Image (cartoon, rainbow, N blue to C red; front, top):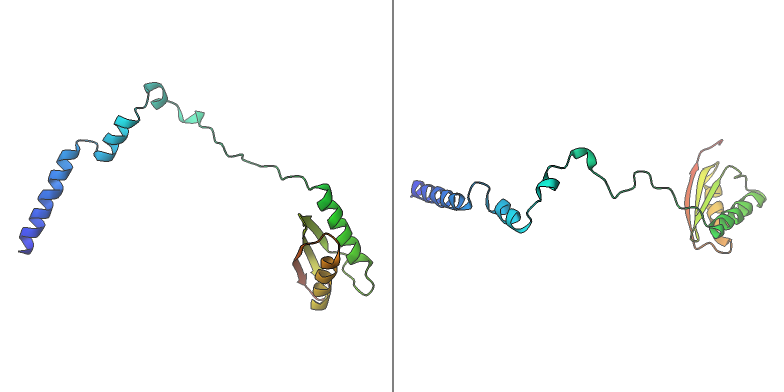
Length: 134
């Protein structure tokens, strides 16, 4: 019985393939629906163009973002008892990101709190790294 089933399945598959023709059903359908003009079919590969820009230029920082990052930097450097002069500050739409190194975890936390207190800051991304002796 097992052999009969496999022979019957093979016969059905062969009949379906024979009905498809030389290119298979998918290729025949596509060829009938979308005939390719001969000029486009022979187009050399070197004429390919992409809609993707290879090196997109970054958007310039807005004046508000530049002012906000300056305010945060000023708040961080003018605070007594906090030595984090090497911290970089970037702002985008009210989101301030802190980069750089600090000597202690308390300095990292204090920098984020000070940045959050500046008018116009919606949130702070604290990417400061604690390195003793930095």
